Structure formats: C-alpha cells, structure tokens
Length: 314
Image 1 (cartoon, one colour):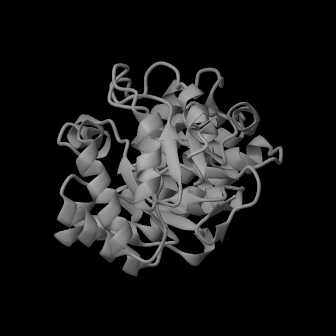
Image 2 (cartoon, rainbow, N blue to C red):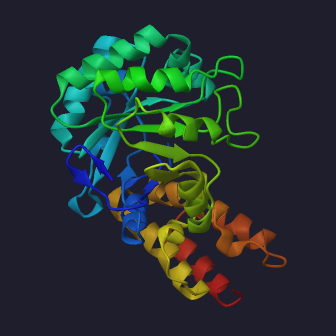
C-alpha cells in the first residue's frame, strides 16, 4: 500500500492523531512497536497562522518516527492554506486534513466534523490545500453529520477528485461522537466503489491486531487506524508477547521521554492520561489508592517510585 511515494507494505496499522495523546514520545514508542504511520496531535490552522507557541511546538517531529503526518483543522479557507504551507516547512511526510473531530469546541464552530455540514467549503479547502503544497495531502472524516446524512459514499469520490492521496474514514457520524459501535459497512462500500483508486483507511473500535486483521479481511481496506485502544498501550501494534515487567518498562520510558521532550510538569501530565487508561493495571485488587497516588504525582521521581512499587504486584 502506498500514499504518494510512501511505501507501507501490506496491512499496515496507523496510529490515529489524538489531542493530548499523540505527543512525540508516544509516537516514537508506537513506531518502535510496529505502527507503520503516526500522526501528531491535531493542529489549529488559525493558531498556527497566529504563531501561537504551544501550537507551533506540535510541529516538532523526529526522523526516527517517519513516516509521520501532521494533521490540521480549521474552518477558514485562507488560514487552512497558509497553515498547510507552514506545516510543509516542518518537514512531515504528509499533511492530513481533519474533517472528523466531533467535539463541540471544534465541530460546533464549523471545523473538524462541522465541515460535514458545508460540503462545498470542505471540498474547496481540500482543493486549495492540495494545490498549495508539494507533499501528499490526505483527509480524515466520518460517515456524515448524523444518520440522516450518511454522505461518505458520495463524498469520497469528490475528495479524490480534489487530489488527496488517501482517505481515512471513522465509522461513526458526528452525532454519535464516540458512543455506540463503529459501522464499517459504509467504509467497505467506499473501498469497493470502482471510482475509488486512492487508499482507504478504516478507523473505529479496533482494539487489537486480531480485530484489525478481521477488518482487512471483511472490508478490504488498505490500512487500519487505531486510536483510543492505544492509550497506555503503545505495544498494541506489536506481534510480540510482552511480559508485564516489559510493559511497565515501556510506560516508564514514555514518562522519561515526555519529561525530556516537553518538561517535567507537562511531561507528567501527558503520561498520566496513559497511566490512567493502560490495561496493564486493570484487574489488580485494591489498586484504587495506588492509582490516585499515581495520578497526583507531581515529580518524575515520585511517579517512578510509585510505578516501581506497582511492579511488585503485577
């Protein structure tokens, strides 16, 4: 499977772009354990154009995580085009356009999945970004705004006509947010459409390599993107069976990387989300107080000490 000139091989697994999750430390770990493609946290086009420092920092990528994509979102055509040009200078392997984020502060303002209510504008943004940069442009979106507007089967060929090099489809509508079950039937329908020649990447409710394989077999997608199931589980992409000790080593390494790459307070904050969600600690009896202490730790040494104490009961 290829996106532009980027070769991924057969049945590649991608790490989904996720706000406050796919920082550089987490991306590097997922890459090490088999993620064929990783993406930055999504980047506000308007904040990037205004040179907001916290947003600009999200453009930092490293060669050991390639191929890597930077995802942008926004509702203003000129800002999206200008942001794409800025992103191109950061040196990613591709630019992804977010037309799928369902959260109110994004979609409610007409960006992300909100663009599904203004298809002419969505297509204009896509076309103008494709024309403005010299690296592959891809799109991530949903099935439609709600179940009365399941437009993806007609939208996909239109997006392809704009010149995008791949399309990722999350199998939910905006109105579903992240509730209910992802519906892959329309993803499969898009993939089987004889008009479609670009890679189709399926996304939604994939929790393991085995489930990804089932999606490849059943729906014929070119790649599978995995999101929330990776929280605290960067080894999810690996076929290797890791011990609990090895998994804890990985989480401790993630903490050290985040502190080194960001700073201690924010590095700890980024890591906490993964420690709260990791399946490694699930099922441990009487773990509540330890979990609370873990999520209240304010220094790396304190958090590492708690993790080492936890090692004894894994």
